[in-house]
Length: 361
Image 1 (cartoon, rainbow, N blue to C red):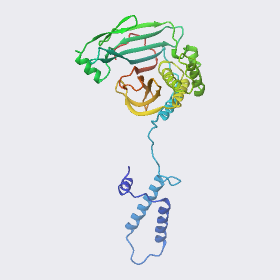
Image 2 (tube, one colour):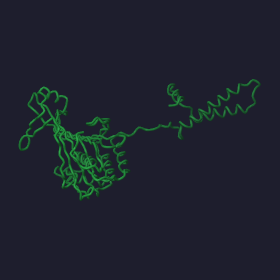
Image 3 (cartoon, helix red, strand yellow):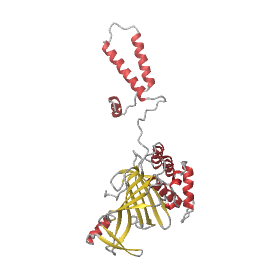
Image 4 (cartoon, rainbow, N blue to C red):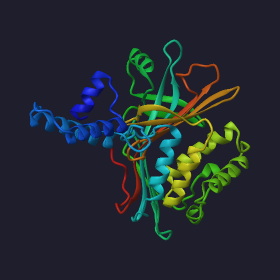
């Protein structure tokens, strides 16, 4: 802010109008042209007045555009859910097709919760896993998937206190289908497996490589395709219902994170997300790594379950930082969901790096 603007702000005085400035300058010019009395002001005073008025006129020309409205200056980015997603769509549409041998996705996944012990010492733990995929660009080459357990841990602060009261165990045997399921706080060695088939978007019936490349680039057609698949699924949610919109949110997030879709398809997916009714921004949030972004949520209420889906978007780069899903019994304790999954995206893009057992983050 220059000195004149600073003074004007402190004094709370509006800037001179363009008309007032011109009138003052004309009066001064006429006065200088008229016959002067014997006693005149020193020229330095006149020159100072001319300089002051010229400066005010220049200021008026800079600050007051045609129409008389002050120049608002640079505007902050639109961090509403719709504004942020449409900005991401524009950026995706203008992106060049990347090169690389594999579509590589690396993410940390928190899932659960799992109940341990009995009341009153009962607490919840969550699993933490590192997941990686290398999807070969050439269908004739093998694709790979890697995984590594990072260790289970208490879910929240209250659970950690109960865990400490229980002696801070490092291993648990949990009931599961067909027997006990073992959990540990320690990471494992990880594994790397070859993928013989690479189906995408399994929840929608699956798409193969050619179908992904042929996905509609028009947002309306892409939305109609996905909502038709959702309606035909096991749950059978009709388009436009809360259940359909919730599944559409999840499917679009999966398309943007896990699927090597062309830039125009990614742009259409962002646009579809922006058009889902009920999407709203919750402001700045942190992901599981402490990176900050804008949280975008969609909530669905039924008589039995309260579901919340969230996407975390970097407001500058428009990259997806994280996504999450949680389901809680309606009327129950919102801090104790029935099911939750949080994904922190570490990498998502094309690479020439060879597949390997996931390294610890």
